[in-house]
Length: 65
Ligand SMILES: [Zn+2]
Image (cartoon, rainbow, N blue to C red; front, top):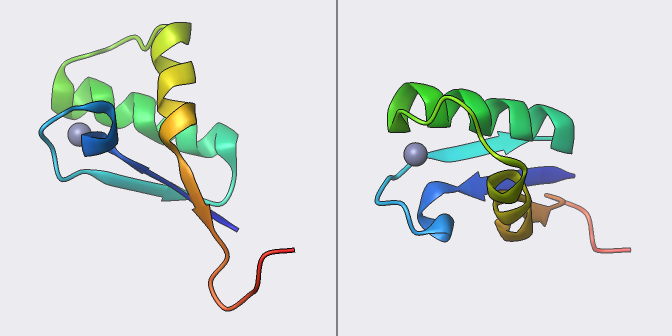
């Protein structure tokens, strides 16, 4: 399963897309991107929760079970 986060889904004008196959790593990558690209060095729990709520998941080549 691939998790995907898109900056534009949280209202940020950015073409950034972050993908990972586990949530912990995805959040870590989002935090890094936010710091490097958006000058947001510390994501609050609220922001993390909001980001999580917009994450989409897909299973390429597999049907949903
Ligand atoms: Zn971004």
